[in-house]
Length: 392
Ligand code: NDP
Ligand code: MG
Image (cartoon, rainbow, N blue to C red):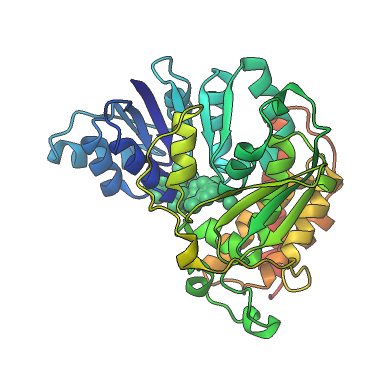
């Protein structure tokens, strides 16, 4: 029996994780579930899965959650605050931590799980984008097992040779991340400029939280994923390619020096990478329908359109720049996406805010988590003031 903490249980990945776990009650039990605003959902999940702890961000939410749990006759203990999040990630009663909080808020608790040597299922790509070097050093130092849940990285992980982590990379030419192209792939630039939050969040293949859905529509998601791949697979940006594949069946590919290309295929359902992460190095039924290729009939591929989706290039350049540039990119993007979702800026202002924020910084190599967090907050402030000052 493995004891699991789910950071971000109320979100899209959290719900899919609980779905897989509930199919295997003899293998997994829930230690802690965390949420932020969806208290009723968290109460129901906590009681249904007999969680020992439920964690929220503040005292008022904790009081409300306790009442909701009592009403459901549950016995889950409610705790709150950033330390509590880290505590349930590092507790010695936990074996597996699913890191599925969205955005920069996920960094500290995920790092706590890593520092206590857990098996960490990483969905929160922003952790690696912000603090890749510190994060990966902590994985090594503490003997944590890091398993990528992002579907592309999970696919690559499955396609790499077994001895990859021993350091011999000579057999590999390219890591090829596939991308659906998002809901605006076929739209012209004028139409994209008028896109609403609802249109941006309506992903054609995947059902996801709002932030990553907007990132997918702008292709910033793919940019963040290139940075995530660089850290996860210890490679250079020159060895990472992006391939548009609108059907989201081929989740990513590894090109070998002998001409072989290995790919992982499956229906677009996050329960597959989640089940892979939970059971690794074994396999587990996930509840995902069998892939029927003759029904799908056609798989198509095309290069990305950088002109139409500038976020991809901006992210790529920030990655090449290195230092705190990716952390600044990530912070400015979070602020811009929030402003877009709130209706304060248009969709095409997102890359402008991110680019202008990056332009206003001199980059340096942050040596500590505090330094990363400092770059993150300065970038947020800069992006906020740009949004206020400029009429996008
Ligand atoms: P959601 O928005 O659906 O869920 C986010 C989760 O984080 C929720 O549980 C939410 O709580 C919690 N949360 C939000 N803000 C805070 C905060 N300030 N402090 C603590 N917890 C908070 O996101 P997704 O599940 O879609 O994505 C989660 C992560 O996984 C992201 O990093 C994303 O990039 C990554 N990912 C997601 C994929 C997907 O298919 N969804 C695919 C690949 C990666 P509440 O809802 O209660 O407010
Ligand atoms: Mg992905």
